[in-house]
Image (cartoon, rainbow, N blue to C red; front, side, top):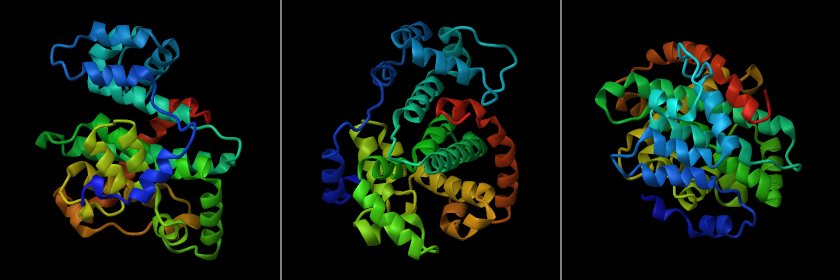
Length: 294
């Protein structure tokens, strides 16, 4: 099943939302020039210079524990040289999304929980991508963005579809066991993964990222064995298993054995990944500050 086959109803719902945020111009400009193999660090730095607030965020993230650089990076151009253009593009996307969705209607606890889980999934996806990097098919920075954005559809539903969100929360009260996406499908007729897929398609994000978000609960249904989709499914599961509280344990769910085997991992590896994620997640502080939670 391709992304194009996602229910037209969802596309209609998302396209009807007014004031839906979009990534800043600077992100699309960087994405555009990246298609040129000769693009320079100076060109990227010049694009970022047009958005001083974003430049500050990129420098903060580059100098954070996320990269663990030995020396402080004092210019955007230097940051591009040190961490690479792909990393900078994904940092711009991450910083944009963390600051993009603000709503007085949403309780802070929901937003806090959302971003903490999304960041944990991002960190886990980055970690898993580094494990299989030698095979050359997954970029750890893109994997981080996929993890951070995987539940973006939940934010769209909560911020822009208050009636549907209310229906979902009422249904969730009476069903504490089923996964969120199943409760959504049953009560509002579509789920957050579909909404996220449509939204990122509208944002013109890379196709692999969009497909991974749309199918992260059902990677085997995406039509192709796309590594990013499988990685996101596994990262999401490990993040829940590792960092969900005892009260949320029943929501962890399970992961398809095909997903674990896809990368040549075994069930016994999961605990080791959990330990590494706990350590990595300690580096999330700067991201949380950008999201207004630090």
